Amino acid sequence: MKIKGRLFFAVVISSTLILAPAVLARADASRDLMDTAQKKYETLLKSEKRRSSKSMWLEVINAFDLVVKQYPNSREAPRALFSEACIWREMFNYSITLGELYRAEATFKKFIKTYPNHELAADARKNIEEIQNQKKNNSLINVSTAKPDPEKFPGRKTALKTDENAGTNRTQKKDPIKDQKKDTKKTAGSPAVSSPSIEKIRYFTDANRTRIVVDLDATISFKDAALPQDKPNGIPPRIYVDLVGARASSGLYCPLTVKDGLVSRIRWSNKEDGVRVVLDLEKKADYTVFPLTNPHRLVIDVLRN
Image (cartoon, rainbow, N blue to C red; front, side, top):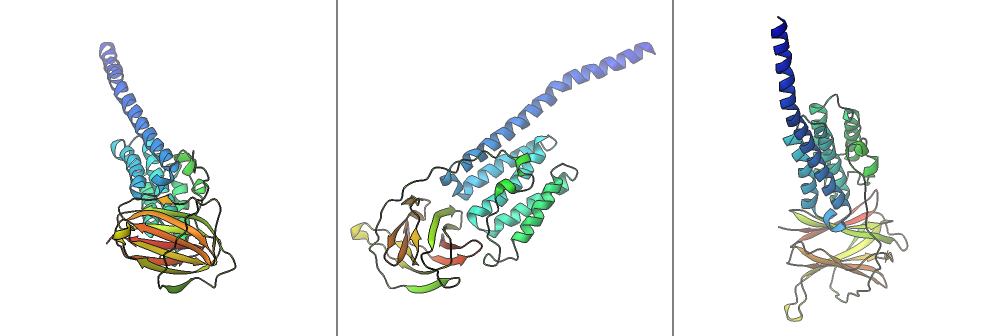
């Protein structure tokens, strides 16, 4: 009996010694993948150009998803899945597309189902509640488009590194626009207040559109029109939007290079009666312009179809 007992413990110890390196190797591999995903995320946050492209966000989400798929039982897998959900939610701040909120909510629900006893499960439920309050119904015009601070997403700091560098301020260059065409007057929200300020102009590119967002500090009247290509003078097709009575903040950088196959660049200038925003297109395209509130914004969607 003593010999059999010794033999049993010897087999157990030998098996442990054989398996331990493999277990440690898997743990190291999952940590390496998680570190890679987090570095991709940090790189995304530090580049406004990258944050303006949906494909860059998806690249980061896929990097975290690789941790979940390859090492589902690792310590990193729950954090990676939670990070995916947070990134979908954060992407909405840039795309203003409801699909991102629905994907965030679905991913948080997946987290709760997959890891019901994890320390981040309660935070996942809080995020779901906040998202449901944020999207009042299935209409972008009716949804609350306030931009929640990602740093305040429940559980985000536990799951994700939060090192962020939004970039430096740049000086606006004067770029007068002389094109004048007949246009149609519209009103964004209630009547414009005196001298509304344009705080920022940004864009977001996905497979369906290039979305330009003008961040404002008040409601505003606007006029828009499309201008054809002028081949003899080397002028591309353009879309312009006049923001009546507005003034551009001195820190706005102009022009803003896009070159995403649809919009070449975005430029603007102060005029006597407001600000003109011009989109130089790479090809003729349909577009829509609509206002959003909470906070005040004017959205220009240039459509790929």
